[in-house]
Amino acid sequence: MITESEVLVPARFGGAPETAHGGYTCGLLATAVEVVGTPVVSLVAPAPLELPMRLEAGPDEAVLVFGEEVVATMTTTAETIPAVPPVSALEADRAVEAFAGRVEHPYPTCFVCGPESVGGLLLAPGPVGPNAVACPWVPAENSPEVVWAVLDCPASWATDEPMALTRMAAEVLAAPRVGEPHVVVALQVQRVGPVANTLTSIYASDGTLVAVATAQWAVLEV
Image 1: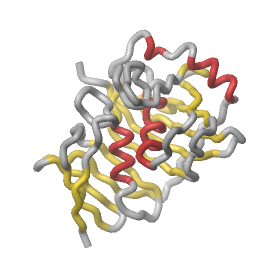
Image 2: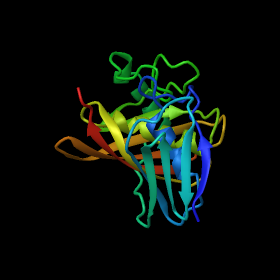
Image 3: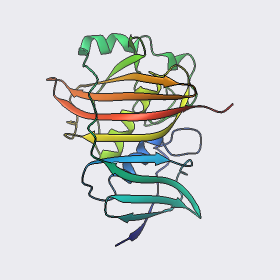
Image 4: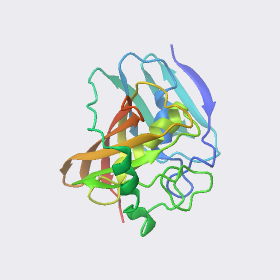
């Protein structure tokens, strides 16, 4: 049975100018229905901000539509997502100092990592190894959509160059605890031509693995 509902992304959760944050959009779709397995979301077109979209959901699948255009689709997989090895809170704190986005950022108002974001998370993932980044995160909110967004942006800073998110799968193992320090670490695991693949993990202060994600990226078109 297919059900339809209306959803929109508030302006606060922006990514590229005038469009919804990719990871947030993925989380919105991934949590639309209860699934067996891991949700996998493919982004087809940018989602708008503050405009109603149609969410069509069925067993273990969903489609997000704006007007007559498909924005994103969700299916599931039985494959597990490997975790990125953790780094210490001290190493994550130090990595922030070398966050490349302070000097040059493709989307400076991005909800998660934009240094000019108003009401955003202001995450600043910096290098902790070859194609690896980390940063601290103290959640003020822990909705699934926000957790997916947090799993998104650090991975973009682990890639070789600015890229656009095209596909993302994630497992939220436990809701991050509001007000408690966490560490987000991301790693580029493969680069083939214009496409990169990444892994991201979120760890609680006691080292508990909170969430994992894998994502595919494509080089931004100039």
